[in-house]
Amino acid sequence: MDSNYTVLARKYRSQDFNSLIGQDVLVKTLTTAINTGRIAHAYIFTGIRGTGKTSTARILAKALNCLSSDGPTATPCGVCENCRAIAAGQHIDVMEIDAASHTGVDNMRDILDTAQYRPTNGRYKIYIIDEAHMLSVPAFNALLKTLEEPPEHVVFILATTEIRKVPVTILSRCQRFDLVRVPVETLKKHFAWIAEQEKIELTDGANELLARAADGSVRDGLSLLDQAIAQTGGHVDEAAVLAMLKRADRGVVVGFMETLLSGDTAAALAKVDEIYNNGADLSMLLTDMMEWTHWATRMHPAIRAGQVTNSPYTADQREQIAKIDARVSLNTLSRIWQVMVAAVPEMQASGNQKQCFDMLVIRLMHIADMPSVADILKQQQSNAPQSAPAPVAAPAAATQQNTQMLEINNANDLANALQHSKEILLYSYYTSNLEVVEISNNTIKYYDRRGDADFAHKLSVWLENKTGHAWTLERMTESPHAHTITEQKKEELESDPLVASAMDLFADAEIVGVK
Image 1 (tube, helix red, strand yellow):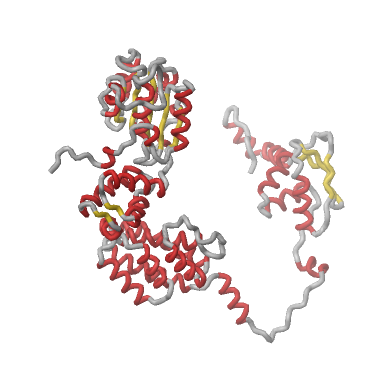
Image 2: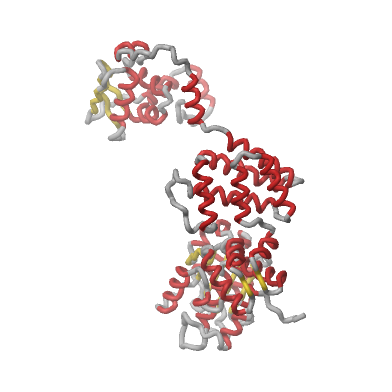
C-alpha cells in the first residue's frame, strides 16, 4: 500500500487564481485590487462547504507575500520560499486559526498581541480565521477595534459557512465575498481533467452523476470521485456510481413516475419492490422523484418554458416527460409536489422506510386521481336541474332596496361604520387626523392634519359602495380647531368619574390611547 497517497481533494487543491474554478467574479475583483494596490485590511469569504474559501485565503496570502516581484502580485510563482511555505501551511507570518477550537476571548487576545509585531519573512502578517462564526461574542468584541484599524502590515481573512452568525459589526469592517456553488458543467470539466491526469476511465454518465451529487461543492465531488475510483479500480461508469450513491437511474425514475401517474397501484408497488431489492436508497429515490416533479412542472405546456434543455434528462427522457405532461394537469403536479415535500420528514423519522414509502406511493396515486376544484365546479353545474327557469335580473333600484345600505348623518356614524366594516386603515386615519366640520346631504367638510392625497378618494369610493350615493368631500385649507374622533373619546373618558378616580390613585398617570 502506498502510504504517501494524497486524496484528490488535497492533491488538486487550487494553488493560484487561475486554477480556482467557478468563482470568476471573486477572482476578477481580487486580481484587480492587487494589481491596482487597493488591498483591504480585512476580508470575509462565505459560501457552502467545498467552494474554495480557505484555498482562496491561501492564494491571497501567496499573492501578498510572493518573492517573485517587488510587491504584491496577482500571479504568485508558487515556487519561491514563501509560496511553498504558505501552501504547506508552515509560513511563520501566515497563521491559520481554527475558530472552532479557539473560541475564547483569551485566544483572541493572544492573536492580537502578536499582530503588533512586524512580519519576519513576508511583507504582510496574515491571519486566516476559518469557521469564524464559531468565535464567542467576547472574542468577536475583542477583535473589533484591531479589525477596524489594524497595523498596516496585517491582513485578516475570515472564512465561514454561516455568515448570519457573524455579527454585523464584524461584517461592516470586512470586504465580503460570497463564493457561489460551482455549476454542474464546470464540475464535469474539472472531473474529466482530473480523471485524465490520474489515467482513470470516467464515462460521461458517471461524470454527470458525480457532478450533480456534489451539489456545487468541488471537495464533495472529488471525495465521491475518489470513492468511485477505489470501488471500481479505475473504470468509473454510470452503473458503479449509481450503486455507490444507491440511486436509481434517471431513466428508471422517469419510468416509475409514468407508472405512478397511470393509476395502476399494483404495478407502481411492484416497481418500488424492484427498485428497493436492487439496493436503491428510498430517501434518494424520493429526492429523485421531487427532482422529476420539479422539471416536469417547468416543462409543462401550461408554463410554456419549453423542454428546458438544462435539465438533467436526456432528449429521449425529456420527450417521455413531455408525453406525461400532455395528459397530467399542472394542478396534479403541484399536489404531488406538496405531498412529497411533507413526506421528507416522515421518511427521516420512520423506523421502516419501505413501509413509509409504500404508503406514500398509495397516497400519491389517490391524489393524482382527485379532480381539481375547477372540474368539481363544472360537474356541479352540469348536474344542476335543467328544468328550473332562468333567474330574471332584478332592476338596479330593486337591488339597492334589497341590499342594506348605510345611513351616515354625523362624524360618529362614519367612524362606527368604518370600524364595523373592518376598514382598519381608513378608520385609523379618519379618527386620528380628520377634524370634521359638517356631514350633510352626502357632503363632508373636513380639515386633514396630515394631508394624505389618496384618503379622500378612497373614502368617497367606500362611501358610495356602502350608501349607494355619490359623496363629495370638501377639504378645508385652515383648521377649525375641532377635535378628532380619538380626541373626543379621550375627553369623554377623562370626564368619567370612575376614570378620574383611577387617575388620582397614580401620580403622573395619563391616558395614552383609546381603543
